[in-house]
Image (cartoon, rainbow, N blue to C red; front, side, top):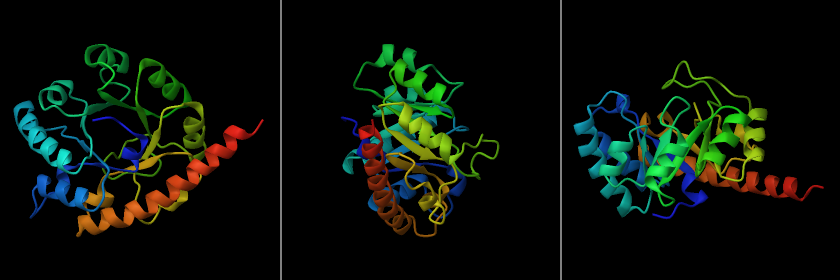
Length: 225
């Protein structure tokens, strides 16, 4: 699938901790039905065989909604499931190594907490950046926070699209207005909601308005002598 920055608008990152009466597959289906534009399948504690089996099923689901499937930090699962790409952090497989193995059509996302990390990831061949954590996150309690000013600096320092991540909820997403990101990666804001489809619909409306505002701000900045 050809990657477009619009795929980052509402980027739903899974967390098995929120599964209850629904399976993770059913939760992802609800998120996509509500308008999630990209899915990241994150399984830190699942064995690889089970992870692969799950990824194959989720890939079919994402394809039906024309949403890319990104695998978190497992290149073997990403390739064997025919996922659209992978997301890696600073301590994971280097972006340049993945790019050499997988070619240009494979989507690579990288986490960036500083301008230096953002520039390095772009130079190595990343397609997009995840910048954060922008707020305190219940899914990553020890995640290093970044300020809104740092988020703006990261967005302005690279030509590839940036998605804000970390603790983003209905109640705080508007605080990121004008920071320059193309979209928002969310976990509990969708997957911990009682009605995941409705949560995705509401978040997507807010995300679209904010992303449009950020694009306008970036255009004014680029035109400034």
